[in-house]
Amino acid sequence: MRKLLYIVLFASLIFAGCRSEDILGEKQYNKQNDKNIEISFSISEFKVSSTTSRSTRATHAGSAAEQQITNLYLFLFDSGGAVKYNITDPIFTGGTWSATEVKVTLDLTQMAAGTRSVYVVANYHPSMLDALNTVTTITGLEAVVHNENTPWSTTLNTPILMTGSVIGHNFVTDRQLNNVPLTRAVAKLELNIKLKTERQSTPTIIEGIPGSGSQTTVHQYGYQFVDFDKHSYAYKQTSKPYNLTSFTNMVNFTQNDEVAKYALTGDVVTGLTITTYLNERDSFNEENPRSSVELKLPYISGGPLPPPEFGNEIYKLSLLTTIERNTWYVYDIEI
Image 1 (cartoon, one colour):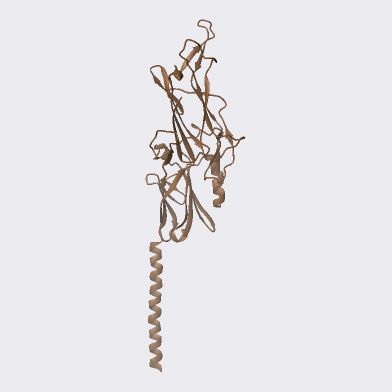
Image 2: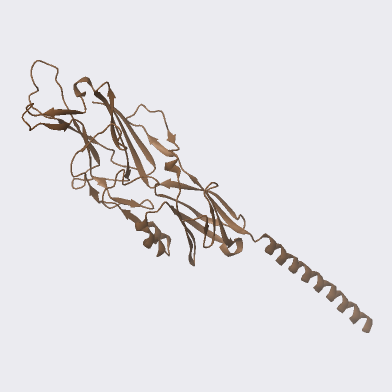
């Protein structure tokens, strides 16, 4: 009996020792492989809408300035809330940011991160910071908005507000979340206008009687943005509320303007270009009409008699019903 008891106890000790080593080995393995997580980003190309254009571009990466990222607000949501990071420098509280690799490395480990839904707001306006700081849920983040009283270029300019998300990434099985797509929250409008002969004139003319002292310089070409939306929402709204505004007065084209410039052939204007960013819109009604651009153009009949009405003419170019974020609207027209 004593010999049998001794053998059983000895076998139990060997078995227990093996289990202890296995468990210790598993713990050691997890510790060695529980690394910091990484999140990289890619910038989505503009979708080029060429419905009324001769352009053959389907997408466009945009300029270097339109791909620039100057800040990030990063959210990692799970059922318990959010871990969030305000990233404005290469080294920030909670990790590091590489602008060249477009990548964030966090101090957060795989096991601590678990499975998370990742949301990011890039190039946020300073007016959005307080709202971002108080976000605790995805619903709250989707309500963050920047309100701009002059919602067109040059006020809406680079760096451009961008957002992106990936739902339910498991960092335990894959510590690297690659290429979270960032989408620009605004659209881009490009008008390329070729002028017919009767619309071609010198940029300015002098009105008044020579020598009278009452002569004035009159600009022949002007433009006006009408019913542009003020709100830049970080994330696309299911139904975006109306908040429209317009230029107070016509603004003159100039030869080297960033937004609206004319092209000369000799001393005569033969073409006009307008380039601006604008906020998305998804509908219009009688009280809130679709966005448009109005043009002030001269008319020169070329005949022996003056036109029946003196003065410039106003042309209204209505934009599409739906203006989508990250879309480049190109119009090539002749007037």
